[in-house]
Length: 102
Length: 102
DNA sequence: TTCATTGTTCGATTGTTGTCGAACAATGAA
DNA sequence: TTCATTGTTCGACAACAATCGAACAATGAA
Image (cartoon, rainbow over all chains, first blue to last red; front, side, top):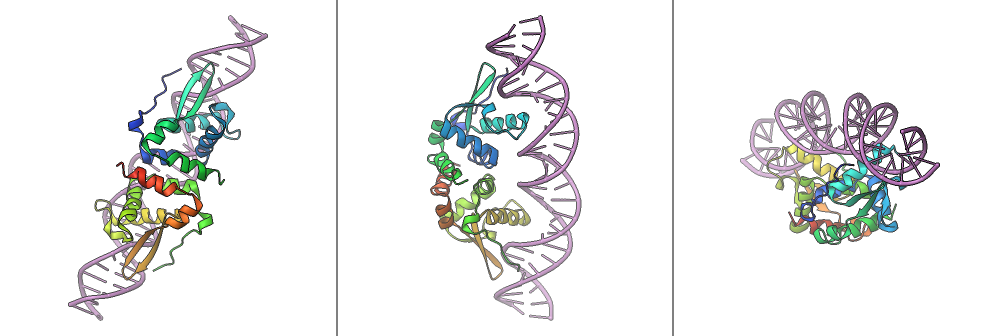
């Protein structure tokens, strides 16, 4: 598989993060990673096409919200808590707390 | 002038708020309202066309981020702090603090 | 009334985004 | 090797979003 690009901590941009999390599916992905820990891509949304989900994971990764790593045939996803907290203190927590409302 | 629709507190949606604030111009508008208080539309961005700015204010208003009221020929804008704080505690503060980084 | 100021609305354009299915790639098991 | 599993990439499409200029509306001042 190809290299997975991740922005450095300093390169994470606020508008990009907000945009990444402004989609309900992506918000849901982040919320699940928050409460259930690292998960492979396949364990999420059932209704959307695989290619659609792949797209959403990519948006989250390029925005710096998640890190992805390949393990076997799976692709595990992790929230970049520390990086986001360092760059935008309190932001991720506030969004995830707000996302619980749904 | 026409009625200005504002969503009720309960109708404010997280994805919509995040989307509204994911645009640099709109983020800037919110940040200025935060530190400089209520302001008419005309006191913001200089480079963008009036119609463009009008569009951005409308997006913020329909998302529940700002309230607008007409006064004479001006249209004053206010951050809906209390409503946002009640609905999504800590969210607006975290975003505005993060926006200072720019 | 006439005019300047301040915004809004409209239509057009350009670009971005979300979605899908089909084809492809990589891994690991039979 | 063959096959199933898991994702990615590609091309297409429709929907949405950002931008602009021109025309319009409302207010208040001259």
